[in-house]
Structure formats: C-alpha cells, structure tokens
Length: 175
Image (tube, rainbow, N blue to C red; front, side, top):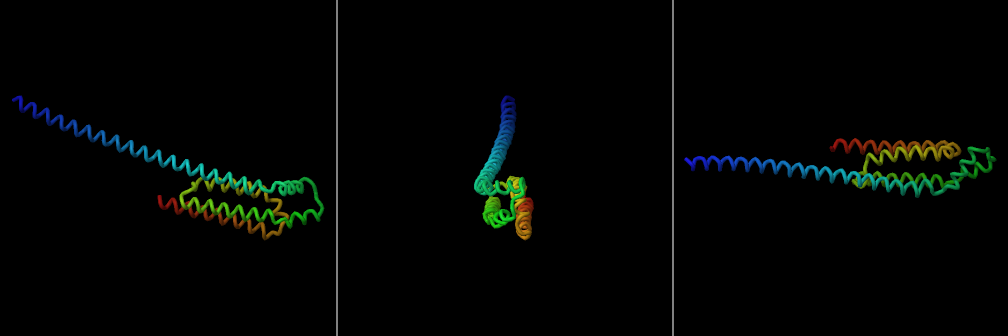
C-alpha cells in the first residue's frame, strides 16, 4: 500500500518537475526575446545617432562654409544694389559648387542608409528639413540666376526625395 502511495507521489513529482521545466523554458525564451528586442532598439537608436551626426557634419561643412556670400545676398534683399554688383553675385559659382557638394553628400547618406549604416526614417526627416533650409538660403540666388538653374536644383531635390521614397517602399516590402 505504501509502495502505491510513494509511486503515485513520485509520478506527481515528475509532473510538477516537467511543469516547472516548461515554465522555466518559457521565462528564458521571453528573456531572450526581450534581450533581442532591446538590442534591436539600441541598434536603431545608434543608427539614428550616426545619421544625425553625419547630418551635423553636412551642415557644418556645406551650409555654413561661405557666410560672406550669404551676407551679400541678404544685403540685396535689404537694399537695392547696383546692377553691376548683382552681376558679380550672379557669376559667383561658389554657391553652385556647394549645392553640388551638398547633393553628393546626401547621396552618400542615402547609400549608407541602403547599406544599413544610417536610419532611413531619420534621413528622410532631416533631408526634408535640410531642403526647406536650403531653399530658404538659396531662394534669392535662384531668383538672380538663370531660370534653368533653379529648375535643375528643384528637379535634383525632387528626384532625391523620390529615390528615398522608393527605398522606403522597398524596405517596407521586405518587412
């Protein structure tokens, strides 16, 4: 009789042990999942920081490079300069070089985003802010120069934004 009771208790102990093992495995899997999600979140935060740092370098190197020329353009807005002075400003190719450099740099950011170095959402957000700021800075210059330049700059901006949108759609399809 005692043997029967002990074997029954032994069976119950085995069942309880199995249940404890299953519960333990569940908690371990949840911890692994939480760790993985935390690592992915940290990686995303890191990519966003890298993207923002790259953007800060862009602002420092491109937009603040030639403040004297920008000040000259601001003077034109405030006072009517002679036609001769305006022609000198029109011939200033420095600003167009900066625009070319800017688009080249943004293209590098886009390539880095495709390779997973930079965060796509952050790049799209800062690119939008950058284009607004850029247009504000260059608006007068665009008005002073040939119309084809302004159309070309606008088309470059538009095609870049379209490229980013296509990349975003590609990445959404993969997810």
